[in-house]
Image 1 (cartoon, one colour):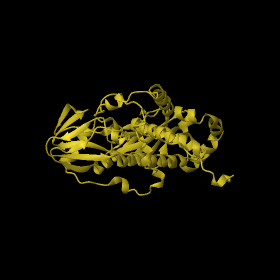
Image 2 (cartoon, one colour; image 1 turned 180 degrees about the horizontal axis):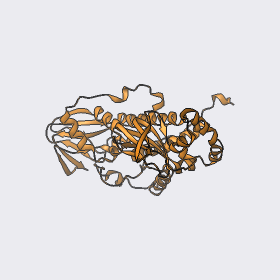
Image 3 (cartoon, rainbow, N blue to C red; image 1 turned 120 degrees about the horizontal axis):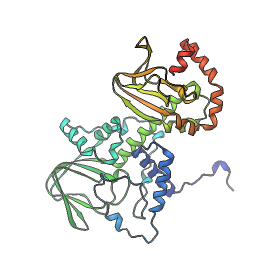
Image 4 (tube, rainbow, N blue to C red; image 1 turned 135 degrees about the vertical axis):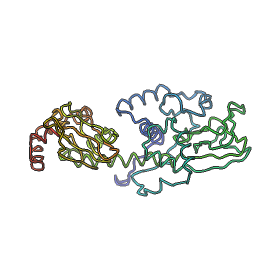
Length: 376
């Protein structure tokens, strides 16, 4: 019998595929509640799960362009779909920040047309500006001649295409169903799944396409999400009140953070409003101001990596200061007090007992308990 140290737990391929598809669906849709999304996702997956005699006709009749309509969870329909985990990517093991951001030159006009072409594709709607720029940079040029087959029905999907120029005919079961005339896109499902193509696309004239492969897209998406999660965990760890949390508790809180963007001059919180959560500054600076003699007086400025409003998580006191975005666009990560209490319910009593000690630490830094406890 082998020793414990030599024993390895084998993770079934089916489990890997289901969890990967769920992770990608979550990253694409960015739901506000992870648990509700997961419950709905797996309920739908169970309802739509076919039996072994299910026909594969539906797989062939999928729309070649799925940019319209509501997003449904990926469904493992038959043995025809190959495991996407054959291309497994571990963002934690990848320390090469340049590898995921290969740049293929484009004119300003070409870039503008690409942005216009993909803006309504569901997969791209939730991408942040940095991610979108990486995707556009990584799209590579493919020149075609009359008669070239771009994709063939039944082949494994690998690339997504945006048409720069040319005329392309679409066939399903050798029947012509539509034509692209110097504009359009197709194959976006290939960015998620290693699944057979639902149709054939053939070039009628010479033309130019911009293409994106699945592995690059997933690497950009997953690595960006991984880096943001690590950043959120570090931000949470910088709050003295939260240092007593276990790693898994901080990870749960990191997943609950919601990114928000404010323009220069926008008011983020208002003095006197109910305290609904705390904020971490990802980019930019903010000005903290208090009402005094019918005007607002700036009492401090905060920048990247700093935070405000943390006592709202425990004390629920009204805001005693207003906070404004300054110096351009400001990106914040917001932790809702209700999510905080739901995730850390067992810790709340301990944190409340320690709040006086925390406030005393703030007094040593800022000098006034009344101002600081309310302002925070």
